[in-house]
Length: 62
Image (cartoon, rainbow, N blue to C red; front, side):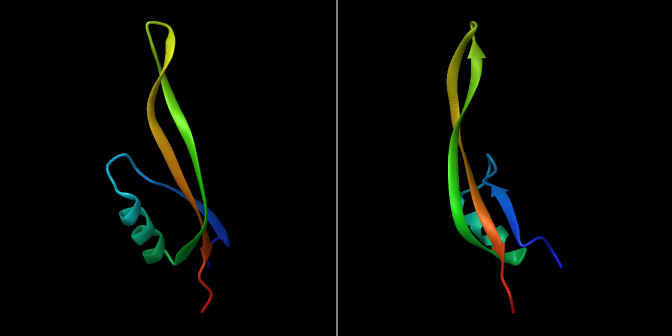
């Protein structure tokens, strides 16, 4: 039996739909979402790189 709740991060090379499908195959359904910006340093200045998207999954009970 897996954890009741787990966060799934949308990988750089996958779509949101692919992440949701991966969650479903693992036995989880989405019940929350959060996003946060990822920055990296360019010439000592923080520069926006991409948006990190995560879904909170809850275990699907039979």
